[in-house]
Picture 1 (cartoon, rainbow, N blue to C red):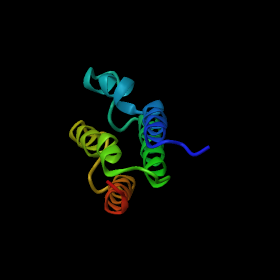
Picture 2: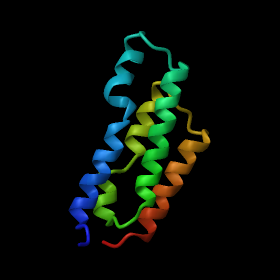
Picture 3: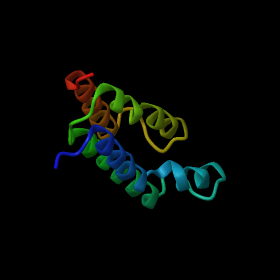
Length: 107
């Protein structure tokens, strides 16, 4: 049985959310308990970026669904807090994957 667009979106959100550094770790950085350069935090963040990119590249999303999982607001927050830079290859790769997905998506 084919997965519906809504099911695919819910699965994507669940997958991305599992390793989302904003949920637990960003607060630790903001409270000064962790540094943005912490190796463990970097590993979690890099893993999340890779998971996000692979999820988007899995395809099958409409433009409306892609708007719901747009990585740009989260990337902006992580960059603002010093966890990422806009020039990092993983950040650039995620943005490019998202832009390609939007360009190829159906409405």
